Amino acid sequence: MQTHRFPYEKVKAGDTQLGKAMTLVKSKQQRDKKGKVLLEGKRLITDAILAGAVIETIYFCRHEALEDVPVDSLDAKFVKVPQKDVSMWSDVASPQGILAVCKKPDTEKLCLLQDEMHLPVTLICDNIREPGNLGALLRSAAAVNCRNVLVTKGCVDTWEPKVLRAGCGAHFRISIQSNISWKEMHLYLDSYKIAQVHVADGNFTEREQRDYESYIQRKGPVVLEKKSDKILMQNLAAVLPIIAVEAYFQLDWTNPCALVIGGESHGLSLEAVELCEKSDGSKVFIPMSNGMNSLNSAHAASIILYEARRQLIEKSPR
Image (cartoon, rainbow, N blue to C red; front, side, top):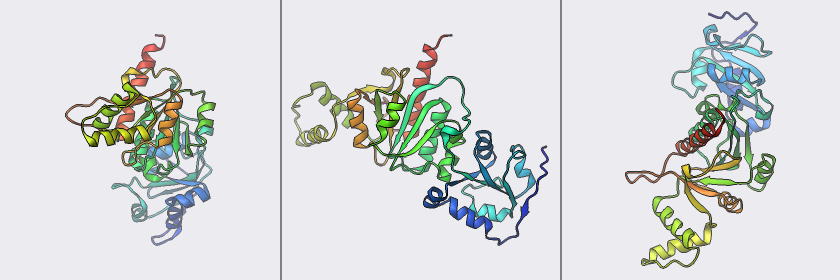
């Protein structure tokens, strides 16, 4: 059992210090303005410390809550608060009794906790609005050691507490760039020397996929029997660029490339599909059974990324 000896401030029930801090870090506007984020739980705080994040204040209920957390070398303020105050501000059912406020990290300057095998795939998150989905996407990207993650404008805030919790430490294991517009996306792709961009969209239904493939193969007028089919094809032809459609396991993921994952509610941005066309990329699909035509965005990304990792391992010298 680790014993910590350091000065700390003890506040009484009803003290507003914790409430003011939580109000600040739980607001995106204030997070961006003040440059601070909230970390909750031993694991997340430990990952942040090991990666070199600047911890400013740690709120804890009991000294036991600090066990196994490397706080001895921190130049941080420690505040002991009542358990009920932490429970009131916590987003989890069973709070561990420890919260931390830290400076919003620049992930490119952190000591990222990575292994040596770097997956040459840059993950681009597009229109991911659900915090749990974005966190899970980051977690999968970290698990396969993605080269980089780019989060576009329109996605939920990367440093939102629920995204951090769902990421399970991924924020401190991979390079993440957030709030990127499609106009500036080429700057990142150029710097990473990425020539090809592929897209995956959970909203691309089996019917649309079949009709779109037919359109791609013919690349010309398609004679369809039903008026509704003609309208569908006209819409596809007018809106969607002409790109190849391939199963995720048919592509070579061992060369530098980017994969765009679209959100479940809003799907891919048109800019993402246009970028795919310009870079001679592919629309990636995952074959399904039993009439299912979509997967959760994070699940779909995991399947594709682990196929990429399998290919990389198979190609690597033994």
